[in-house]
Every structure is written in structure tokens, then in C-alpha cells.
Length: 116
Image 1 (tube, rainbow, N blue to C red):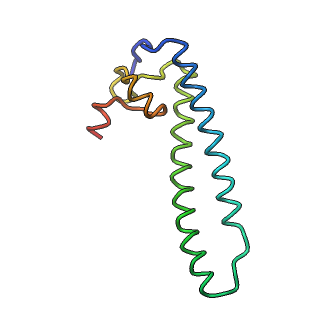
Image 2: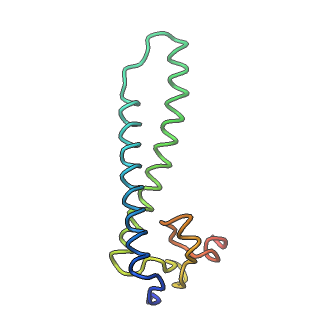
């Protein structure tokens, strides 16, 4: 599908790239900390192990959510590199700047996101 010409100025795109890179770094650090915590030796006490298992489930969910966001960020950075950032990956229309301000890695315009 041909992409619409970018409607964002180069300075806007550079700002979004900086935001995405910063978020990628923060997520990478958080995911590393989660992995480190999950690899820690477990407490021999049964009650403490039960609490640790509950904590591990929360950490695993946070990790899964973080990895999903990291993939979305990588895809957004790829769209920047290909010159189609800010264009809906489904319909090819521009993504509203307010939407990108809220979710810089958003791949879909508001209409396509609602339809999904």
C-alpha cells in the first residue's frame, strides 16, 4: 500500500524518535531487572515461597507487557527509518498528532484503532 506523504515536520519526527529511544532504554532496563529478580534463589520457607510465586506472576505479566511495548517501539522506529512514521499502517491516512503525543508508537489512526 502506498504511504501518504508525511504530515509531521522533521523536527516532530526527531522528537518522537528521541522519545521512543528513551522509552526503549527504560523498558530494556526494567526488563533486565525483572529477569534478574526472577532468577534469584527462592526462599526455603513455604509461606515465603508462596508470596514469591505471587510476586513472580506479577513480574512475568509486567515483563510480557514490557516486551510487547518494546516490539511496538521497535516497529515505530522502523517506520521512522522508512519514512512512514505518523501514517496509519492499516489505511495509510495520517495519525493525529495528539494520538502520537499520547502513544508515540501508535501504528493505527484513531478510526482504525476503534475498528480493530
